[in-house]
Amino acid sequence: MGQYRLKKEERLSGKKRIDTLFQEGNTIYYSPLRAVWIEANRAPGRPPARMAIAVSRKNFKRAVGRNLIERRIQEAYHKNKEVLNTWLEENNRALDMVFIYTSSQIPAYRDIEEKIIVTLQKIIEEYEKVND
Image (cartoon, rainbow, N blue to C red):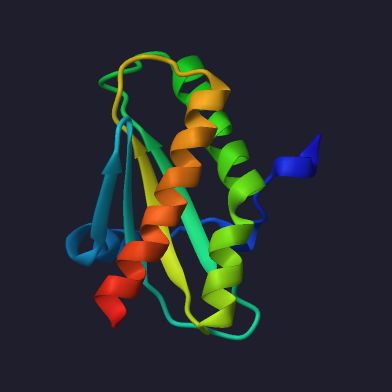
């Protein structure tokens, strides 16, 4: 069951860090996902990427729908994060990011996974542009 769970260290938390992320972060939009990311300090024992997920209560009144989407995003990210983590480790970098789901429809898992894969690739491309 816990095969695709995120470890506690991989979850982004802390009001100050999340506020900084939204104020100063870079944004990538690939409908229906918006990813906001910012470079983080690389510390020993810290995973190369930490993430959070946001699903609007405005679009999904019931928690059941929000939780379903969050679980699907989390699983898709966990299955495909290795590309991003490998690139970050090779370049001795770290980042924090949040995935924001913007649609009002509950997506199929395959659609979410496709969007996550493309979004992670775009984050790598944008990261290279910003830091070169």
